[in-house]
Amino acid sequence: MIQTQALLEARSVAEQLFQHTRSGNFLKPGKTESELNQELFEVAKAHFGIQRFWHKRIVRVGSNTIHPYRINPDVDLTLQNEDIVYIDFGPVVGDMEADFGRTYVVGNNLEHLQLLDSLKQVWQQGKVFYDSHPDLTGRDLFTQIKNSAEELGYTLADWHCGHRIGQFPHAKLIGDESQHYICPENSTPLTVLTNDGEKRFWILEVHLVSGDKRFGGFVEDLLLPEISI
Image 1 (cartoon, rainbow, N blue to C red):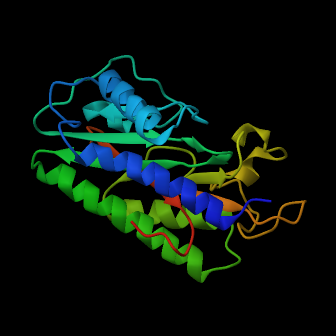
Image 2: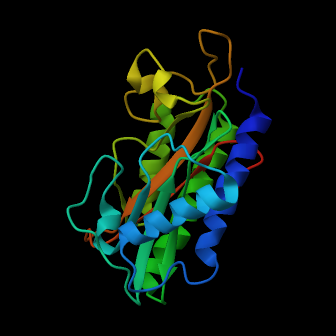
């Protein structure tokens, strides 16, 4: 059985790993996406003992930030002095999956900074909506996130805005795929128990793209009462 505390502990490790992005010269202009990715991977292994990740590690810079998870950009972009970058890592801590994503702004570009604020706003509004509507479906929450994004002048990058999370391996989830995602096709209440009588735990993702599709931003975190961003 998946325990809330175990998920929170895995998330805490992921959050500490991401704190490295705010220290030293990690987000230093001149580094490529692949260099940033490899450096964070090495920190995860050396300082947190993380050697497994349940999904591909993502670091995207500049115009590559408009691309969702399933897209693999052709160009390994280099971080610039005025830039935006998002990171999405899914470390396995013990036998529990974490999924953590954040966007960072390098420099003082006002559009980038506005997007950063909008990401937090849309995610937090989604969490409040989830917390206050115990019977909402995946479709309901997706629609709420989509509407919030569009009200602020952005579009969503992907066909869903989140998924279930739990024990490794995540791929063992079976049944109708849509029931494992926060998406328009999921008409099942997110709080419904599994066939085994277990609670479903969810990751809420917000991936916004600017109206002109020049850049985007991404944030994801656990949908639990203890979490805010």
